[in-house]
Length: 203
Image 1: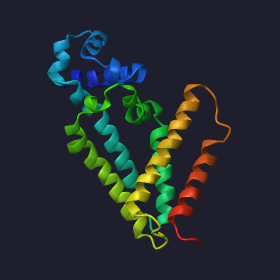
Image 2: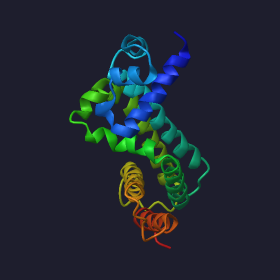
Image 3: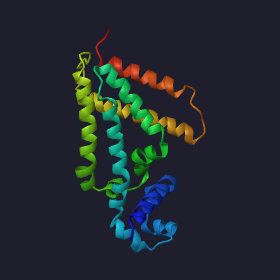
């Protein structure tokens, strides 16, 4: 079997995830859509956990790489906040379907921990997110304007979570075709200002 079959399986799996969520992602559904046998799917992915890993892990790695690249040349906590927020927002808002499957879709399945698997979380996903938070924390704390009111790692996680919350609400507004009263650019500026006030020294 050619490697193109594997890529087709991943592409169709993404489509099913976006359309119907993780519960609908079955080997039978993939095989039917591709016109191949269930065994052909299993040849490439022996379990649903391995399939989800192959879908989700590259997305998480890409998010981490995007952030690390954005803050690589920052010289202050404020510039780190600004570049991190803008980079994360761009990354997620350019593909809201991907964002929904990374952070929202899995929560709608009755057994999300089983879907991903503890081994994948511990061995594959946690090291990547740890790298993201460690890099962001290091960049924040290296700035002379970092106020230290909260640990740098805690500030890094809170920054990331805050951006994800923005993306969630922007995605919701888009999904229900109910435009936000405030433009995304204004909301991102406000978020940055709030983070700067909490993380950086005054003045």
